[in-house]
Amino acid sequence: MLVQVREFMGTCGNVFLHFLVAGRIYFLWFVIYSAAGWLYEATICSQIKYHKFINRGYLRGPWIPIYGAGAVLNYWLIGWIGNVPAIFVAAMFTSGVVEYITSYAMERMFHKRWWDYTRYRYNLNGRICFIGILLFGIMGSLFVYFIAPALDNLFSKIPKPVRYIVCTVLVVCFLADMAFSFLTPNSGEGINQYSTVIPFLQLL
Image (cartoon, rainbow, N blue to C red; front, top):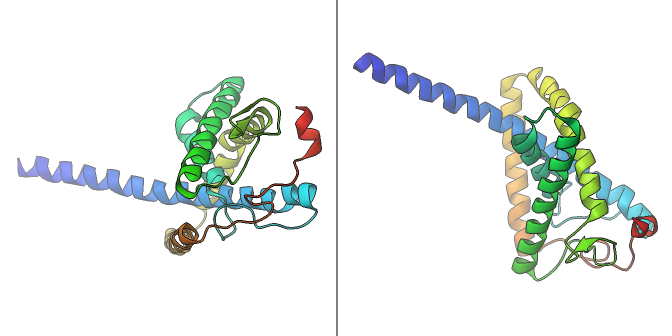
């Protein structure tokens, strides 16, 4: 009986360690994709709309969590699908759901919108639009098929103690940014005040 208990405890410990290690990998994915989303929004989108750099997003730091959350959720929920068109459609759906719920929740909490698609064609209450979920579907598919495996291979070459330190620092910075931004959310023109849209996207 004692041997069985030890074996069971050992199995539980191995499972816990597996999820602990996997959790760090997922968090690094989350941060990298959040930072990539911020870079895309702060440079390309801001330059096209306002011809200048704008620190987009609800947070103050260089990350927009909805991109990271969408990427990780897509990997969890649809990464097992082997069919490319099915993954694309599923990524569009899950990304649209995440974006709509996030928009609704943030507006309920802060009485502000950090994106508004009202002036875009085929939008749903201004929270999501066809071109938006189309782009998210493309990015989600690329993440599942190419980016996630490449990042996984890269992280496997980094010593575990280094990964642990990096994750710890990033978690502290991210939580501090969340706490500060909850009290004083990032706002202003091009962030949650809009005076223009990307012209060619209105045609889609």
